[in-house]
Figure 1 (tube, one colour):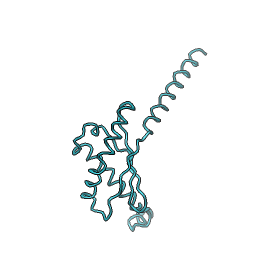
Figure 2 (cartoon, one colour):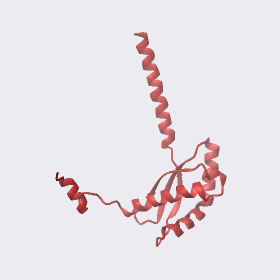
Figure 3 (spheres, helix red, strand yellow):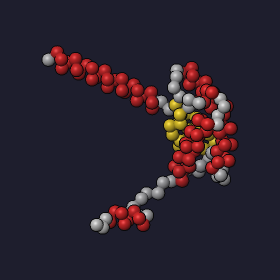
Figure 4 (cartoon, rainbow, N blue to C red):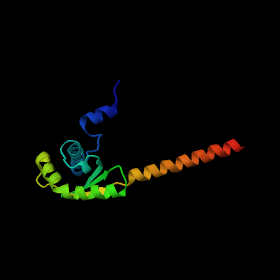
Length: 137
């Protein structure tokens, strides 16, 4: 059976093309994730998880969002270690990505995971209160 949507997509008209900055950001996220797992010698950086990368449209600057398990003291140490290793990571990206300009890297701690955990805790409290009130009825 003929599907017009398949025909339009097969010609390339139905899909939205992603911006180059988004594609480069995805490549940087994947490469940094592998770098943290395999090539970084600093033990503080082995627990770092890259949650997202945003790029400027001119591809000159990248904001890397990351999380790390642990308390604020560990997060501060990891932030200092990332700042120190930024040059190494940038030179690695320059070799791998083969771009005209290698973006400057800015590391920002991602607080979304903490907010999600806080919301889940609130939902759990609401559920327990609701079950208690239903038992009393």
